[in-house]
Length: 260
Ligand code: 13P
Image (cartoon, rainbow, N blue to C red; front, side):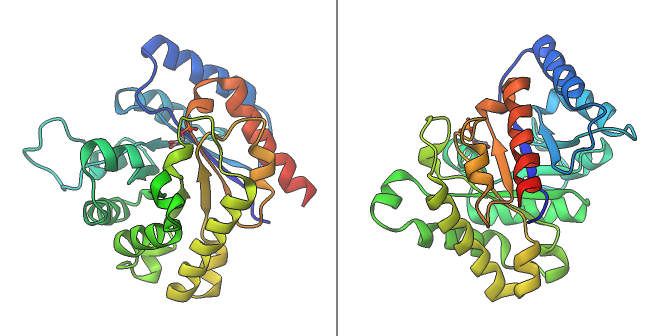
């Protein structure tokens, strides 16, 4: 089993003082530990420097990640933030194609593909989200939907590019609802995604690709999810806003690795 990757997606939460406290609490909780689990914190853009300042220190336990970037390289796009800007701030990961961006900001697979290209060009690891709506699962179309999202946003990449990508499966019906996919549901989809990667890029690439689960992952269910063969970690929303919960999920990653 590979070491787990745990990514905190803060979304649009917390005023500055609370954000600062959260980072300090996480830092204190993790300091002096020899973690095998990799940790990425994705705050809102305006707080990025709080994370990059710490992430750049030699003994830092986490990396800086963004929640989004522009599909444009640079120029007159008021309010947007480019991949180049993120890279120049020391950001090493970026979430793309989150279902909230697909739903509220009309992001298509084609736009997501453009963002992925710009992130890779700037040496930032894209964390590419996919996942079906409840209606799609009820209609038995969940694998078809996820296959299309992955093929259209990722499969134009060369192998040397794809190897730098992380995939996050986030069933939309599980996000922020308290209704988690069962470990079996998560494993079924993760194994399916890995089989798509294997067909396109081969067995070694499929094994090495990190596939995270996201959607109401919390300290209670994280271990059961992380124990699944094809679940390489978690993309955590609500539970990443409380240092104790987030660190308990990291602990679950550590424990599962030790036991397997
Ligand atoms: P919750 O953990 O709050 O369900 O959010 C998951 C998510 O969307 C992470 O990107």
